[in-house]
Length: 304
Image (cartoon, rainbow, N blue to C red):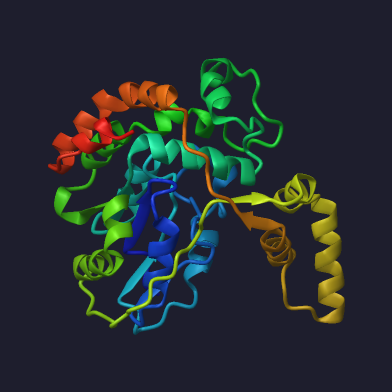
């Protein structure tokens, strides 16, 4: 069986879900389900969908000879201290796709996602940002938070430092960097460029629907239940489904409930002064990223 030979390694809220869905539809691509197994992020054990290589490889048991590229897309690999080195040890010839975004917009969007996943409980992003130092000392960590390091929004947004770490392991020619704004403005061109990077022919895709837009729960308590259902309930459901021949898993049932309980929400703009503060905080790291990827990102710094 072919093992994974390409990885979308992040960053979160930069279009990785959309790109993975587009690639999943290509006849020569096999993409894992779930999209984000996070197996190689051994420093984030609560996000890993598999704890052994044997379990991980079961995600790819349906790979067929026509699948020239086999991949997955775990958005925390770039932030993880372990993942990129673990991927290299597993497959040094793998190709990595990195999707990046203005860190101010990225961490603001990430905060919304953390509320949905119940990892965050502070609804106001500005207050959540100001909780970072307290949380570093182990205080004010939400009870349902799987990985407190992911609430350190400043560290998550330091994409330059993360890219430096990645390129200490993988050579540049095996890494494709995509800027979120380019992906949004000309999705087809970026998609075709990714296929070329992966050594694949175009599949002629013309439709690129929007995927994974900002959401909030209609009922937060139901959202908490579907994100973290009691293990006993899942076991009971599994027992019943085996007895009556239901094919859907308990986790799929929770996904259906989550979708029904979610509604699209337009995110309010950040307060101008707060946005300036964040931009100044990230400016030095943005300059590092500019040098690494050889692109002018000055508009990230001047954007309001």
